[in-house]
Length: 464
Ligand code: HEM
Image (cartoon, rainbow, N blue to C red):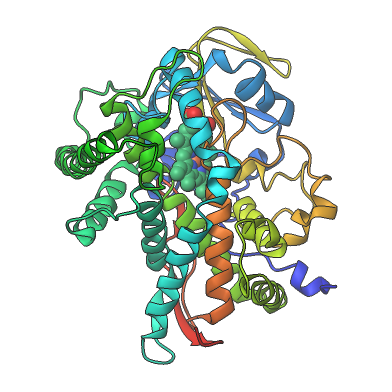
């Protein structure tokens, strides 16, 4: 049983200001760190209204109203231009960005690719990427310091590379990684042009460079896809590499028998790389940080990892119960996608509040997960909330790091499994200590990440 002191550890987060920011202050804060925009009232009110220059905005943190927007009346709430630009710039034909019938078709084709059984079959690949990182850390001098945030970005990209293309990305992996980072640094910012609803054809700063990066990604991926098409076509049987790319190329829409076009395959690979990379990396970085601050939970994770990793099975992640509770609590406190937005198509009513067409709806998991009306000790790190005996007490629609409804994250099982495996492997082998005087602070860019990385000293706990 853990003591009160551990239950009360409140990790770093901006203190909500007592008053709402004025419009100019809002713009400044949005550019600097959107987390700072949330004043105290948002953490208390179920629905708050804001007047923006181009439309009304509703900040919705009432579980029933969330259900209406994202599930019951989801057809009336489409992804708005801000969200589209921030989350899916350049990936216009992938699942994250398409709407209507094109989305329905792709979702039907892709659902089996992310089914639980398929995801479980990636356990070995995930373990091998995690062990690869542990081996590299072991080769460093004793007590070496690394930026754990950057290391997690690397390991999650490796996991995607081996699960999508079992043969690797080919060519220069480092060049691909650098391009990926450049891409995120441009698309992650909410600019004034977006806030004022300035149309997409007006160029945004850094976008010329982005186009160049996109052309590079497309060329690398197209080469791999082309080679795989030829290889699969040459096989008489249904054999072929056991990875996401083979699944994507062979998947058929169960209703029409249609396959994804080559452009859709490419866009979805880029979508998985971008949607599944930084999000999972930040989940891992924050989990490692939180465990470094609370030794009691760390010991529980080490114990579990030692037990379950000695003879891992395909259902390994299901058995990492404490590790998963730590990850879910991390996703509550630091949800990688800190806010979602939608635009109302037709008029509607949320709670008792009328919503006009074109209103902007913002649902912020960051606010919802710390809402005073929904959580006890909302700012405290307490993974026991997510242990099996307690989880059922969490109100529905009060916790949604992966979104809710038809557009919910298709990769959520993949991400949770990957995060649990990597966290267990690293915690089993290393004590990761935050360097003294490090400033750890959440910064919302495209994902919620530690502003200045996570410099940590590695002490090997157990030989590989
Ligand atoms: C901890 C890790 C992750 C988090 C927190 C996360 C979060 C989210 C959220 C909140 C959405 C919904 C956006 C909305 O409703 O507007 C979403 C959608 C999506 N995610 Fe994830 N995600 C994660 C990992 C992944 C991974 C690993 C993949 C794929 C390999 C992935 C692929 C997608 C795709 C394709 C969509 C769009 C689904 C659709 O519109 O039908 N995500 N994700």
